[in-house]
Picture 1 (tube, rainbow, N blue to C red):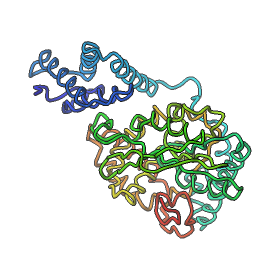
Picture 2: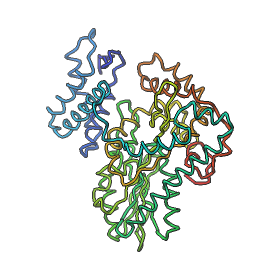
Picture 3: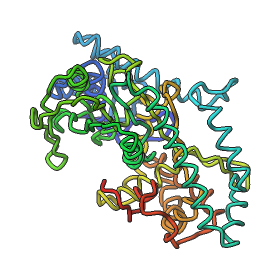
Picture 4: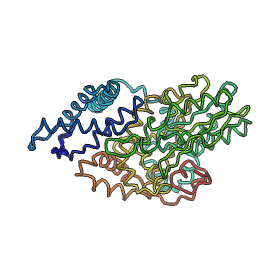
Length: 446
């Protein structure tokens, strides 16, 4: 039992001490190098607590850095060299990210597709949709249906171009990867892309990566104890590679089935084989992550990346963040399809974003083509649906140190949304729109 009740965070805040966070951090480091033994992680966490109990009196409160130093020493002492390296690397990456936030970059990020952004900005300026004020003006003038039409046409043209690019390489391709961060519109885009390619005479077979999740009993958790389905290490990457290599070589494999209700994977459930002229179609968060499809050379893949790349700024000259619009989309989708309260999605977004920064964004520029799934008309619709909620969350989370991330996001979105005109009539939004994936009413089955 730990006599330590609180710790000091890097911000100086004093929060409750929980041994489970140490155990989860050790287990996540083990998962990164192929280990999945929770009992060992718990045992090592107990040893860390014992050392802390000896080193600190009842009146002393350890700093988070002291605890992490102790974890490293315990891992090395017990011969877990690879796990300690993974833990140190993860810790150092976090330190570097904090430094990057504190220091303005002297050069543009290599992870941002600047050419694509320029084209989107030019499109927005041409249609008077590059500022909140202009968007509001057009809505006030009764142009909402026309904005919907313009936005949907731009997206449709991008999907059609992606289909054409794939068709140009079809003779050599073995798979098409449709990827992007959470709520970027992958599912709807996958359906639309397949429709385009079917019309051109090409056949695809869906490879469901979600069936390769590990059992929940050996699933990695984040530092707060939440099961982390966002990390690629939650998937059996070795089995995925084994199966796609066999499939691409014309062999039959038995696909597993993952039961999300019980958190259990059942192996060898569904036979699958690529017929002549069929290509694998993979819709996954981590399609660009190298380890996901390392068994197949890149020349046999087409990698399509999605992101709602809004180019619209508020009255203070601040541009809307893409991650914020995806958070809103995820809130709405979770409330419809998963019975999650939107506040739950907001409070858990920190680890969704953390995984994106580590495992998705760094590989963005390895994509063969990028589709912008942003629709400017989304903003007034979301203002009508969630505007008051963000105002409420910004107030509720203000002084809660444990929900600091939720407060920062809620207050930032609230500040932007306060300037957007609300619009609740959604009849002009097509039933096959990518936005229907999040607000409901789609003709597609998800």
